[in-house]
Amino acid sequence: MQSWKSGPALGRSFSERAAHLSRRTRRLIVVVGYLALPEALALFWLHGGVGVQPPPYGGYSPLSSLALLQVLGATMVLTQGWRTAIGPKEPDERQRQLRDRAAYLSYRIVGVVVVLAMVMFYGALLLDPFDSWGPITLDSVSVWNLASCFGISGICLNVLPIAVVAWIEPDPPAEI
Image (cartoon, rainbow, N blue to C red; front, side):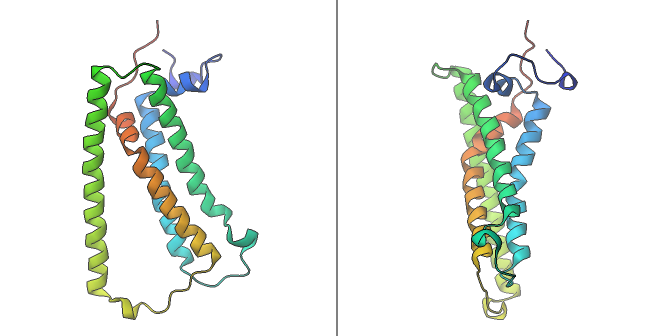
């Protein structure tokens, strides 16, 4: 097996390379992909509905697409690695158990995140009611950033079981 320092194996397709990533590389891809969600939220809240110069590109912010490209790239690599690892056949018993464990852990993660979000939202309401927040203006950049937040959230939720598998699986066996 090649070390990570020697670079990608020449002559292998993207699918084959994605299926044989080391555990460290897979975990790095998961972290980079899921960091897109706080990035998108930060872009939305930093913009904060403050009026800016006429929005460039009709409200499209190139900076906000960075987080979207980041999560799409991670999703593509993780999904391709999972499909290549399973192969064209039906999953065997070990792969089914791994899939079920990933689904179980994913639901637990989503449950914790939803409860934390509700506690933070209701805590913010108790500390500072809506009527004291002032007017909220949404220009085209804010709408684009908010749509990016929802899109990235949806992608992250759909890819969560594959990300859990990428996180918990050991390194692939060395090729002979």
